[in-house]
Amino acid sequence: MKTIGRAFHDLRREIGWVLLYGVLTAIVLSSFIGSISGFRKNLTTARFLSGFKQNRVDMLILESKGSYRISKTDGQEAPTKAKPLDALFREALSKDGTLGGVAELSSAPSGFARTVLIVGRMADCMPVRVPNDRDLYLAVSSSHADRVGTSVQIGREELPIEATVPDGTMVGTLYNHTRSGDLDDALFVFAKDYSTAYKTFYCAPNDFLFRLIAVDADDAFKTELLESVSSAAGMHARFWSAQAYLKQTGDSGIQYLLLRIVFFGIASFALIAAMVMNLLRVLDAHTNDYAVHRLFGATKAQTFLRMLLLAIGFHIIPVAYIACRILLPLGWTGSEDGGALKRGIVAFSPEKASMMGNVFVVLLLLIAAVCVIGYVRFQRTYAKGMRRE
Image 1 (cartoon, rainbow, N blue to C red):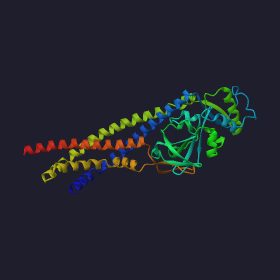
Image 2: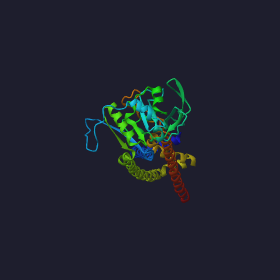
Image 3: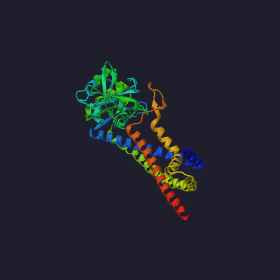
Image 4: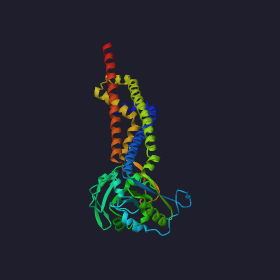
């Protein structure tokens, strides 16, 4: 206990450096971890979206007719008599058809904020292997990986959760009207066709219009679909190829995050160098205190413990920050009724939790290594002093 008390006394003499350096370290480490996590997620998203090009995917885009201007290349207005959208979806929105869609439903089983319904050919663009003989197939985000193997009530059936959806791979399917944080607490339901989705969830064709794709569709079918969508939605509809979408939005986010990683990486290395030099300076400044402690009967272990406690206390702010982020992760989540985002406890994905844990362990090991170096330097100085006596 006396050793701990002496370590706290040493720490009080360095309280200014503790506050300044601790806050700066916590900010830089947090930004660096966030940048790496965002980069990995965006890279996964880019790879996922690149698969759209291989399947010749076209995305349906809806625009208000009031803001849309007819040009010479747009052709004439769609005829008023078009094929009902429900009938068209029953024919083409299936695994054997040409359409794929995603619908966000506010109703969800207990433990989930919403249900994300993935129907038809959209499943072909997902990194989730859905068995061909399954009408419904359930998956969760990686933050809910512990629920794989459990069952939930879907309609009148009790269905098992059998897979996880990697982070970043759902962004391409929800390229419109998605709030941050919703997908972390979503239940993903893969349905083989529109008829199955309708019987189970009573969804309407309009639920899929903002997230609809056509895969390997010919021009005649595209024209028929655009006419039906324009008639049903009262909006102008057009297709946007996945290749054009990626060209406009694909690489910019990755380049931005890469620059952030480089910047915060340089800042992190600078902070590590500053931490090592400053910690050695602090330990050297207390050499006389440690020598007096040894002369009055302190063992080598007690001297090293006093150094280690001072070093850990010197970095208590970043250590406590990372520990709190692991044990009590806070973030923005969507309310179950689809309302505004709210602050609350959220589950980290296994990748981010592992990253935070690795940073925590590396920081402690680095502090211990610097203490070993400082202790060896003290022992040499102390031994020389004894020989001079």
